[in-house]
Amino acid sequence: MIPVLSYPDVRQAVKWLEDVFRFRERLQIADHRAQLVIGDGAMIVAEYIDRERRPQVGADYVSHQVMVRISDVTAHFEHVRACGAEILQPPVDHVYGERQYVVRDIGGHRWTFSQTLADSDPGDWGGESVILKE
Image (cartoon, rainbow, N blue to C red; front, side):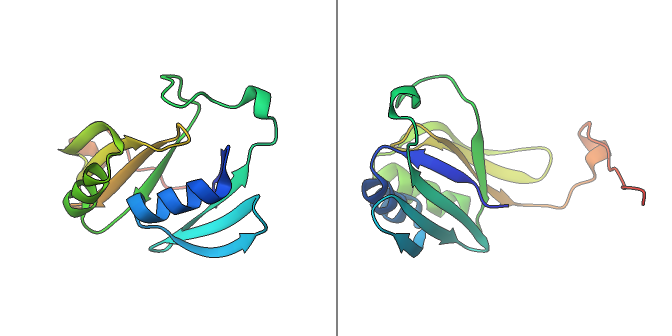
């Protein structure tokens, strides 16, 4: 699955995502679309289709968020904070074995960056493993 996130200025968003979150641009399609990669993940940055109904930067309304698995949350967080990004939650270690922080990008999108600290048993923290039947 590859998320597609809309921004008012694709080239500005690509530069910001590269500089701040350390994505790398893989493909550029004119000035209206780009594919970026980080680790084994990818995303598409696209121009707003309907400029009149786009989300407002800094708005508290959240229609989605993107989670990215990285190897070192603390180092990534320090870099993102030094770049002046809007931190919504600093790094926190969770009972389910993840260290995560939350940040809002220049397009108003909410991102969670996550590092696996331990492979925990979901039953220890209120979750339940589900095995899909064929």
